[in-house]
Length: 194
Image (cartoon, rainbow, N blue to C red; front, side):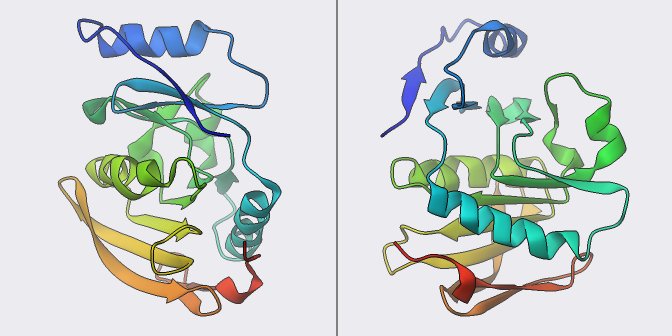
């Protein structure tokens, strides 16, 4: 199933767009994001998608500080890119997340993880990639199940403007190492293949 997009009035301010996103009743279980100013409603991820996110989350819990959390449904705001994004995983300080009612600034994240779905892989590769870099999130792990050359995980870092530098790429079956402050190896051979 593919995503549904809801256009917006270009005259609408960021605050009005966020208010609409917050106040609208969206379908239960769906992922609702604002991507480049367009509200996108996606169905819940497939089981294999969730298994990959869970395996990464399990590894991260063994290395993060006690005052950080790993969130699967946390909305992070990048107003300069007209983005309200919900990565598959966000690693961020718990206290700052606990103080918010609906979303947190993306700059609070230490790491974001996206696992592509067939219908919206482009968003993860291009739009969200640029938004996360713009927000200066130190690390972005893209697990691209639908990459043209076969499933792969790419770790991005050193954001500058709206661009990241690729730090490592691993085909499924190869390990990918996350640097400090994580210093952990993600074993992609555990990821289910499609």
